[in-house]
Length: 300
Image (cartoon, rainbow, N blue to C red):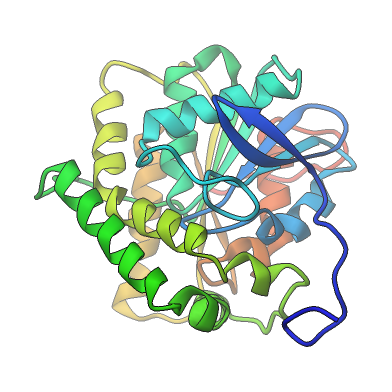
């Protein structure tokens, strides 16, 4: 029996690869053109399970846990958008996948996906931004070192108090419920992935550096064009007509226009579109490059 009272679960799928000195948990499934799935702040490989299952018959699907998240080893420093873009390229290198790929970035990882396409244009076959983060005029107010030092200190304090083990899985479940419109049962790896101080620290650092990553991407846009890379912005819509929800759709549409891409809506769906509407994500990926196995127009 495992410590959480259930039967001991088998090992997680995938393998451990050393990338730039950090051991990362990486999964590679399916066959065909390459597609990378990258989750938002604090997310793990299993959040993409429903989407990966739909894409694997048509694509080589790559997923990995960023440092400190899921099963990956801790980070050696705070994340940056350029650093995460480089990490995507080096994970692909470690897998022997050197050609162009489609990168799917959810929430915070939309910054990483866009940075990848701008900094590594020869490797970008397309972008799908899944309810991606939008910051029209990012201006971090404090020095980066101050924010990261504060976040690291808070994470250490909470870890010393035993909060990750006591409250980590509960916080994860509350986040999922608040970010979805459907009922999703807990996955076999979910509780264990959020019990550690390693994951808490990684989440704190991603949150602390959010504005700086947004500013990095904004600074890249004038001098690093997307060079014709097809883009789809897929926005979540829960069906309500609140000003906040409608404003979010308009901001997502504006992002699509700014990037010269298509705009599509997944409904009903919360922020975790990959859980509520995995078919919408798969369709956005496959129709981005006119896949013959799944045709469908992209919304504007």
